[in-house]
Amino acid sequence: MGSYIGSSGTFEVMRNLNLEKIYRLILLNQPISRAQLAQLSGSNKVTVSNCVDFLLEKGIVHELGVVGAGKGRPATLISINGDSGVLVGIEMNIPFIRVIVTSLSGVMLENIILPDIGSDPEAFTQQVSATITMLEEMYKVRKLGVIGVGFAFPGYNPQTGVIEQMPKWQTWNKFPILKEMQKYNLGIPLFFRSTVQAATMGEIHFGKANPFEQLVYLSGTWGISASVYSNGALISGHHGLAGRIGHFIIQANGKQCICGSKGCLEEYGSIRALFNKLYPGKLQHHKYIREILERVRGKDPVALVALHETVQYLAIGVVNVINAFNPSRICIGGYLGSIIDDSLLNEIKTIVAQMLPKYYWETLDIYCSNLGELGVAYGCIAVVRDQLISILVGDSAIKK
Ligand SMILES: [Zn+2]
Image (cartoon, rainbow, N blue to C red; front, side, top):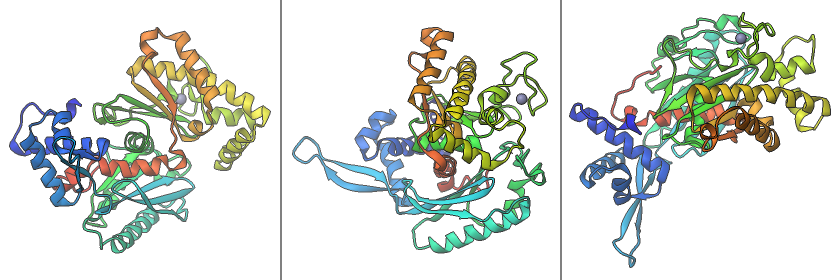
């Protein structure tokens, strides 16, 4: 919680920090009274009332009426005003682009799959800009209209605003998506994250984790990447490239990895490793992911044995993650998260317990995301929702 509470600073900085704190407490504990907010935040009642009044005026929260009459002092409960505006999430996920629109409370209003624009990033920016303009028109009747748009891209570097490397489409490599989208002057705050960072924010806002935890999100798509959320913020590393867990070396002089190294976790404990076992000699193609998922869900014995072997290696990756980050929760998402059942999850926990002292894992929660295929899109929504106060106080144009 430390990052929300400043020890010094200007009046404005302190006001914004208090607003952040109160907003997040309402998100987490709604409906909630001003007195409860004061208790939870440690702030005095005047500060809480000022923050709530600001959020009421902006339309972010509303009062639900008085409760508790006859049982002590009555209190007015405060809740997020889901109808005041909408949030847009745009997930670039080859071979499709998913656009979702939700209320501030996260209620799904639109779930649109845009046609594949393939290898042309300029076509993408044109298409999504037109879509955003259309959504602005559709939702302008709401007080706040479209509040912001969150994007998730594979290979996005949050420090440079550039797509470093897009799987499959090389034309996207080094594409300055942030700068290119700014050219459209949409007049709405835009936020960009890598796919795994967005998925992590999705877990914080709509999944099992909460903002006061140390969460490591392991994304198992073709490979394995990770994002760390700590003390209210994503950790992206010196160059914005933190989280390459799939390239932790678990075998000296092991299998050749696509990164150029040998013995990386990805070659043993990922969907790609599973693919190589089940389809030896075939070229990697997205259609095989669907086939693998269907085979596992259909209890194909060959696929189940291969998955079992893969998960043993994934568990070693989980042990490394625990050693590196000492998290309170580890969430496994992506396709891997959708096919690891309770029994496999227990195997991972057993391996962790065999390899690490008890105090490393006794309070640690390892689980699979239940947000399914909407996890990343919800993550885009979460990224905007997370920045709501900076949007409201005007400290936000187009963000990385
Ligand atoms: Zn590697």
